[in-house]
Figure 1 (tube, helix red, strand yellow):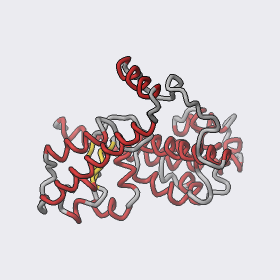
Figure 2 (cartoon, helix red, strand yellow):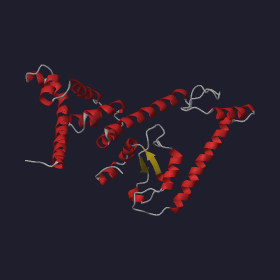
Figure 3 (spheres, helix red, strand yellow):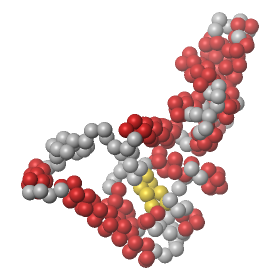
Figure 4 (cartoon, one colour):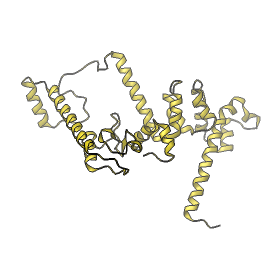
Length: 284
């Protein structure tokens, strides 16, 4: 039977997805197989040989499955996902380091809708927040234990140009509070951006179009630059996210828009799973 390229591709996707599903379910059985030592009763020298010959699994995949089962002993929701083959061990491995009995249900929900790259980003964000909270608890103030007042000792991720350094030093030598001057400049910048957003908001009309006007994109770029608007993320912004769902607001109010990378966009939508499920298709 001769198949078109498109039909052949569709069959490959269909059979491939089924293969992944049954592979996940087989992996979920391994902890119980190991407990019963079923592999010995069936003539296999080890559980690794058992898994390799019956399902083509590597020794590392078997170790991951057995390790996850132990790590999820006090997390029944995630353990059930493993044992029932509801998701891949790759996804479960990504989140195991941040999983707790308190957050396991939330993580289980996110695993179902987030791709692995977004899960990696989620885990990184959670760890960063935990480290920040730990630092605050250590000194009780949420500030560095030691603060250097010198303009030359900086924790900036960029270099000041020589002419800027010269002018700041001159102001400093004349008794100006350089930090206060910079704060006022930054405050003025924020105020100007907020004012421009308010002006735009007053002219916005309801629409069903997903097109976002150039002036709106411009003010968002002035506020966030080219990168994701999540403070800890330096990935390029790929999507303008509506913090007020466009399907409900029907407008592109810049006060409720945020440029996000693909991973944080997926995470943002996963927060409202009912909305995601209602769409029944890709994230927007």
